[in-house]
Image 1 (cartoon, rainbow, N blue to C red):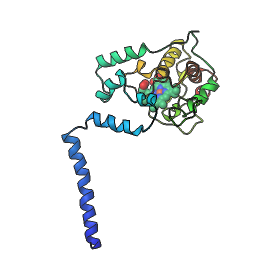
Image 2: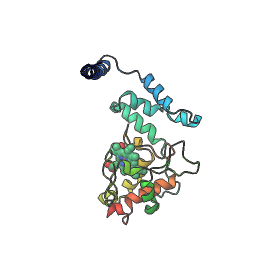
Image 3: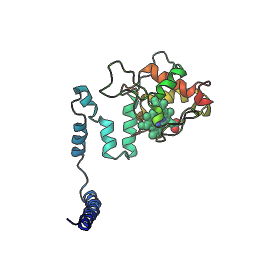
Length: 208
Ligand code: HEC
């Protein structure tokens, strides 16, 4: 083919592609079963317990079906259901060691089947939140948590609420984009206490 015709053919193909994609989107919504099958295929040869992780629970099913925009009745059902999963510390103490919490907030390791078995998972909080001000690398999907404890006057009820939020974000807000760290066994009770201390200890750099 002459170079000019090659060029013209390329234009024709690339011009028709977005149109085709658009037509598909408007005429026929993508079957969720195809999406599920695709996601399953990306898990390859992962062990069975990992395969089970991608099966959505009742809450995720409801959120997925509504593209996270659930009715207020459904939202109430979700927060009530998730609230039942929250396990509060037996000793009634919500505050651990903020220094450990700072490390957990910064740690994005864990949750991959290539991890060595003794890997301690982190909270990866900075992926979505600004926390201590000297940290310049953070995501903005979630609100800034700078001065979180100070702004709440280190109030006991707010401390408990933060524990609940980190343990199971959807116990507080249905279809939250934030992971359910305690309920899904990503973080252990002591780690959540340390994180809450990072948010609420008056000497934590979050409150400086
Ligand atoms: C994938 C993103 C993501 C990650 C990771 C994440 N969060 Fe969030 N978080 C959010 C979003 C989005 C919100 C706002 C919506 C909501 O309240 O659920 C939020 C809300 C919060 C709130 C409530 C803020 C308020 O307005 O009072 C707290 C506290 C919080 N996150 C703490 C944490 C901590 C601590 C971690 C790490 C253990 C963490 N988050 C990890 C996305 C995330």
